[in-house]
Structures are given as C-alpha cells and as structure tokens.
Length: 245
Image 1 (cartoon, rainbow, N blue to C red):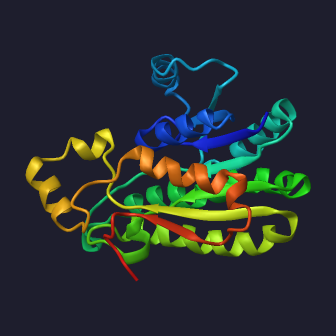
Image 2 (cartoon, one colour):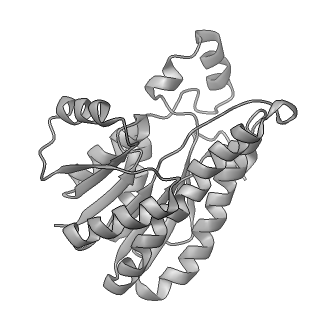
C-alpha cells in the first residue's frame, strides 16, 4: 500500500487532502500539533476513518530535533513514505510597521522552517526508493504579496524557491517536488469572516467565488498521481484567476 504523510492534515484544506488521498488508496499519516490529541481524535471519528486508512501522528513541525526523531521512528514502523504534503501553516497578520518579532518568527518557523524539518528526514529514503512525490502548499499571496502579510507572503514565496531547488536535486532519483498555490478557499475559518469582507474578496476574483477545499485537494491528488510523473519544480495555482502572470 502506498503511504502519504500530510502535515496539518485535519484542518480545512488538510481534511480535503487527506480525504482525496484516502480515496486514491493511500494510507495517510496525518500530523497534528502535540496537545491537540482530543481534537484530532474527534476529527478522525467524525470522518469514520479506519486505522488502516489514517494514522494520527503528533508532530511539532517547528522542532527540528523532534521531527528527526519522530519521523525516523515512523519510517522504522511504516518502512516508506511515497507522498509528503507540507500543508501546515499559520497566519499572524498585521502591517509590517506593527509586526512584532514573535509574529514574524512564528510564521516563518511553521510555514517555512517547518517544511525543512519535515522533509529533511524523509527525503533520503524517498530518493533511495524512487517514484516519490513532495507537494508543498504555498499560496497566491506567496506569488503576488498581500498587504498586512509580509511574514506569510515571505514564507510562502520561500516555499516556492524551496520547491524548485529541491526538485532539481530529486529529479534523477524520480522524486518530483511541486507546489500548489491556492487562492482564497472556503474553509470554516474563511467562511466565518464578516459577509462584507467575504463579498469584497470574491468581487476581486474573476470567477466570483472562493475555491472549495476539494478543488485544492484535487490538484494535490493529481500531482501525487502517476499521471504527474513528468511534472516537477512547478507551482500549480488554484485561485480562480485572482493572480494571472
């Protein structure tokens, strides 16, 4: 059985990615923040997953040593990971003039340093085995920037550079590395925004609506599939035309 690991796998987009990969026949290791076990278990039961389909793993993506230890132990248990989806992310939005060091470092540590911490222990084994996929969830705001998101935009842009450079290293071994850059997506968090704010957002999107989490997950499932074996170093935008080069 092919196996996938998804960080932030029980959030809005993460849940859809997990569902898509399970539907594609993967056993999915879903990482959650240590201390959130009850919430993760509630999610697991709500979705009626079996332990064969989904395995819950506590993992602090900001802890370099902890990731090394936990993921090496995971490899001893699971033997291999075929697909890695770096999806964990946070926001700490404010204008740059008001941005505290903590707001900067928290976002960089989770969104950018986290993909190093998680990918580094898994990459050698993926190269040795071959035919593996790494998919990084970036953002439209990593491509175009966004007022009040200097920290987030910097991290998500850095993720795209990481994707291209690692793709060059993994290519000969048959490891593809790509990014998906969603636009505004109808997750529970976004849908809780004030109606006037949501209306202003959708008015600026050519398709006049938010993405659904399943549409983002479909892009991930495609890049994880055999049909995408010759695609690497690319960023697939799922944003309804919000940002066109």
